[in-house]
Each structure stands twice: as C-alpha cells, then as structure tokens.
Amino acid sequence: MANLLPTDTVSGLTIDKEASTPITFGKGWKFDFDAGEFVTTPTGRTATADENEAFMEWCQKALLTPRYRHLIYGRQYGHDFDDLIGRGFSREVIESEIQRIVKETLTVDPRTDEVKNLVFVWEDSRLYFTCDVISIKGDQIQVGTGVVI
Image 1 (cartoon, rainbow, N blue to C red):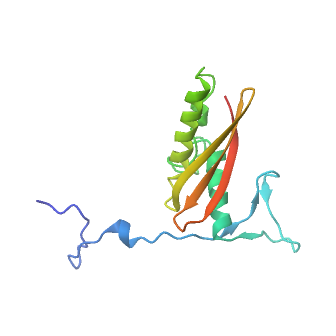
Image 2 (cartoon, one colour):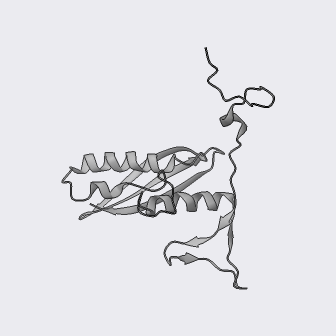
Image 3 (cartoon, rainbow, N blue to C red):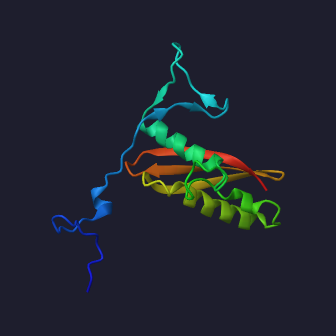
C-alpha cells in the first residue's frame, strides 16, 4: 500500500508537513476599528500591536469582512452573514447560523483553539453579538460585531 504521508524525494524520509510547521503569533499594526484607521504614535509612526493584540485584530477584521468580496483575501477568509439577510428565518435559526458562521470564520486561523460564549442582543432588525476566542496559547479575547438581518 502506498504511503499517505509526503516523502522527501532526496533522502526518502517521511515528513509530516503539519507537525513540522510551527504556528507563530506575529506582531502587527494597531488599528482603530471605530475610526477606521491605523493608530499612530506621537512621532507619527504606526503603532505596533503585540502578538495578542494582532490576533485580536485579525479576529475582529475577519468578522467585519464579507467572504469572496475582496480579491486580496483567500477564499477561506471572512464571513457569510450576508446569506442571512431577508430570508425570514426565526430568531433561533438566525442565532444558530450566526454561531456556526462565527466559528467557521475564526477557526480558519490555526492560532484559534476555541470559540465560545456567544451572546446575542437584538435591536429591531439588527443583531449584535460578542464571543470569547481562546488561542492555542490559552489566551482569551472577546470580539463581536453587528449584523443587519
């Protein structure tokens, strides 16, 4: 039977690609989501975000970006909340779908270990939610946004 793991053609060694790729948390640039711009220091430079801030910003940005709308992002990045607009689903079904979409959106990143504790608040035809995201390092952050239904 053929070996299912990739083989290094030079040495013939079996390599488990997933185990050999370490998951890294990198730094990034601080972004002010309310203002819609990067945060600058008093000297005019863009402020840097540490590993946890950068991960939180990635999560928040993924929840704000519609999937397939921007060519710069891969097909796995972003949300599908737009599929719920105007469908006439009950609140229970919408909350269940939002929960599914949020988990799918955030677990694409290998730094995400778990998404839990979704809390929903309805205001007319708008649904606001927050959730806790646990990284593989065990750090917990809270992110959320709103969706017009």
